[in-house]
Length: 238
Image (cartoon, rainbow, N blue to C red; front, side, top):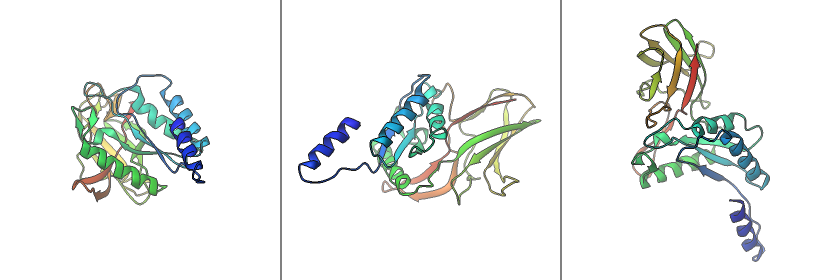
C-alpha cells in the first residue's frame, strides 16, 4: 500500500499535483491464527495514518468454509477497540455477505461491500452493532451492544442464527430494552438450565453465519437490501 502511494505521488508530482490518501480499505477474507494479528493490524493502521491516510476502513474477516473461529476475526475487533487515535473504522463483518463456496465474496457481494465502504467513509459515526458485555443470572444471559447513535437492534431479525452456547441449550433469544438507557440494545437469551459456558455469535468451528443487525437498511444498486450486521463475538460466561 505504501509503495503504491509513493509511486502515485511521484507520478502526480510530474504534473504539479499533490497526492493525498482519503481512505484506505483493508479486507482479509480468509483466516489467520497469528497471535500477533491485532498488534500487527494496529501497526499497519498506524503506519498508514502516519503516511497521510485520513481514514482506514476494515472489513472483519469470517474465516473459511471449514472454520469460522480463526483468531483474526476477534483480533480485528480487538484492534479497533484499542485503536487509540488511529483513524480506523469497522465497515462490516464478511460473514454477512454472499460468498462463493463460503470463501470468496461473490461479484454481487463485492459491489455491496463497496457501497457499505463508501457509506462508512462518509459517516464518522458508522459502527456495526458490537457486543461488549455478557452476564448470566440463573438461566438468563443478557448481552449488551454498542449500536450506532439513532439506531437499535432489529427485534424481528432471526437472532438465534449463528448463536451458540456450550453450557446449555438456548430456548429463546430476543432483543429487549436496556433498563439504563431505554434503548433496544440488549440481547436476552433464555437457557434450558442455568450453567456457565462459552457464548458465541458468527464465530465457531463451523463456517461463520448469522443475521443479527440493527434497524438500518438501504437498497443496493444490485437490487438487494444493505444491512448493518452485528460483529462476531465470543464471551466466557460464568
